[in-house]
Length: 458
Image (tube, rainbow, N blue to C red):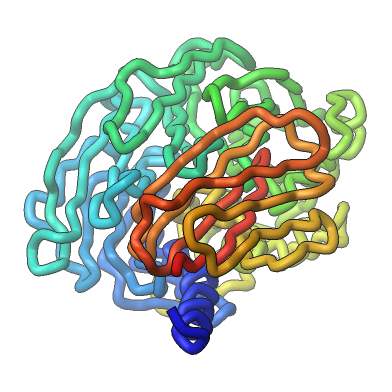
């Protein structure tokens, strides 16, 4: 492979790395939508969905719409309901009615996980969309496979520590059990990891949301019947929830309690919404100590309307669902009033926002980059191009475990390894003699941080 070919491939790699825009198209509420592809949310007025609460959207890596759903119907990129794409097992009145999870090892298929409303069947189910069908517009391969009942309306997911598989998490309706279902290239494991921890719902109110932090190490769940939020640690290797911190909201008046939940990108701050009376609550959770965290509570009073879902976006701002225009937390990494909440700031054109925004897998926003030699981590890969073996080294990583994958340009995994690490440095030589000549990605994952390198086999 000559130098010109190598240069062209590296340019291609850079474009591919920075073109991950699967969550740049949002549809929600009453025919409302936003397009984030330009870096600033632009109203979309072509949506066909009308839903009060939960929903989900997915685009391809170039930011072009594939489909969207309210957990009941699925609309394709042309805004037509897919064949057999109705009567899914979610609900227009479930807080996190739907979540779209890519099928590991298959870039044409997607799972749609759904939770029904707590006043209805209370089922947790999944369906499968195959985008290779129906002339590329998608069709339903499997519909409403029941995984568990009864569950609350809370539904979220995060990448596994191997950066390939996913954990999909739901919560029992009446006790404090979390159920983490592993999604891999073998399918959905119907035997979940169960963690019994946190608040037990009382009074029958189990609405509201739960979310992972972007790096997957933290989990937060609203506890509306306790006027509080529960904060936990999460192990992306084992799927276990641990180390509860209970964050009550004092002097809570009568009305509807906590509903939306979201972490800032760095997971330094945690936010929740209170629907009636409307307000947004912030905590600094960086200390890791419940007593210290509770002392950082800051309340942002909101003039009117009901505050709903909170959702981080590709610009790292947090968007706030509310009647009839969303608000935005402009600087979610800043404390108190400096977080700069702007009420009804986001235009949705002729559409209307209610109390739901698209449910997104937080790890999708994990920043990746091609690094020749990070000043902080001193990351190096050599020789590159290579013939048979390639070595990567990371200094000052201070990680107890790491994993790496080799993928081709189609995103197909050709090698996946997970290892424990002793000491502050990582050094690994990989035998890639079995690969054909060409271009690949080396993806290194260290406790929530990912480094990506373009590699060339001669």
